[in-house]
Image (tube, rainbow, N blue to C red; front, side, top):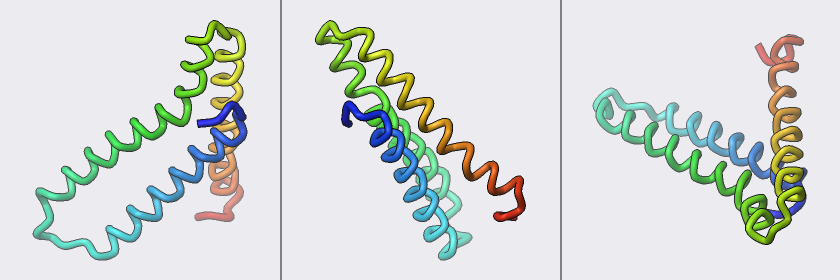
Length: 101
């Protein structure tokens, strides 16, 4: 992604929101005859999500690491994870506060 951990974390968060919206959209048109298709869709979505998140979180740190900028690589990765952890806490706090119940 980028060398800006904030953009990387925001990208990951936006991706998750889009996946949730897609899952909501698909579940509204749920068909009982899709018993075989649903697990295939979920495992495929999980695999795709793992690949996208790995790219968002790891691409730039690995490139920096391979360019012998090991401290920058670790710093970028840790900052990205830290910012993403902060963004992850927001829905939990809102849920606990009763805004989303």
